[in-house]
Image (cartoon, rainbow, N blue to C red):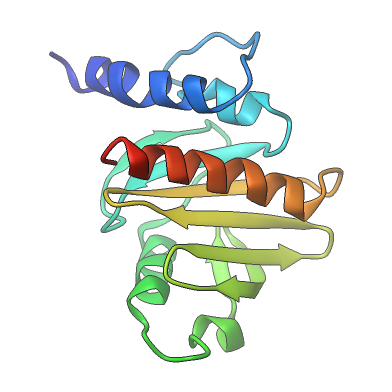
Length: 154
């Protein structure tokens, strides 16, 4: 089985099951239309939990390896508060003020837009919501998907 077929079989079906159906077809440039198709996030990526491998990503959402190491470092930080809450977090070339940082979730804001990052057993869900979406709505959508993935072993 090819890597793309594996991703399609495992992750796209999981994303479709956890989100509202989307009229956007699934293909390599938009590997998780159901998450983005909710309208609660406009860009998203799924990485392995070490942040070293991209499993799926919106075509217009480029998270650099350095940015992923910031995310992974924030999850490894056991201090209270986490250092990322003072320094901020960079995602896709933008700096976000971190408003929540715990063992499974990182929330960042830049003006009225923001990011919601959720860690599961094997994956990191990196999502961006536009200023037209309420932060709680975006967070709820991503947190539910994270809980679903954790519940099925991911």
